[in-house]
Length: 233
Image (cartoon, rainbow, N blue to C red; front, side, top):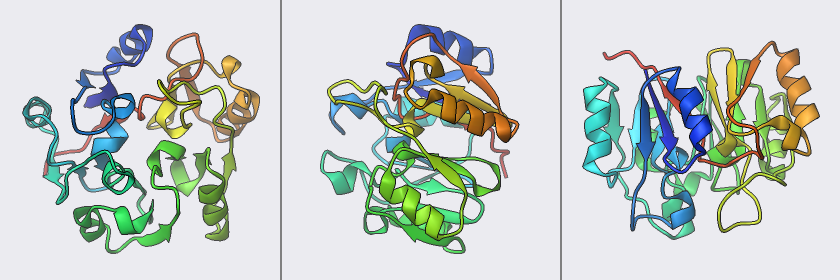
């Protein structure tokens, strides 16, 4: 398994994650704006079958994926600073659904998810604002996404984005502060610092998830934590 994180997340969080497996600390320069330049959810899209990545990721990153035997497919379009180019890979995908601002989704993602039900949303930073759990339950910090998922018959909760750190912005997003590995939720920060921490904790515990807080401080939007445990085919 390989764990992909933003190089800028707090050191204590890195140390705890390293106990789970090797880390790939992501950093880029001159592709997207600096605050999200190391965010995994900007450059990687996890699907049930494979990993789809932005073709302009540095070679050192793709070499690491190859070295760790993580299968991946190059996307068709590069990333950039405009909204439509920044969010190309920021889709949320489950075994049943593809949720994204579909006019901006990279064509390779659409091709590989052609059998899934599409839920179009206005929020391009979909994965930043959305973490899917088992049985297509979810956590979101975006009102529009939450409404669309409810209309589709999915169950989840809406939490505030206030108090989530993201350099250069008033706040980050909940999906970017979390990662899921089996029945464990890893949170970059402590829920005791989060305004909706009690609500979120209760929701997760009611679903029998184990919660691991990676450092004692406010939630930190690092573009998510991606646990790569695909089996080569």
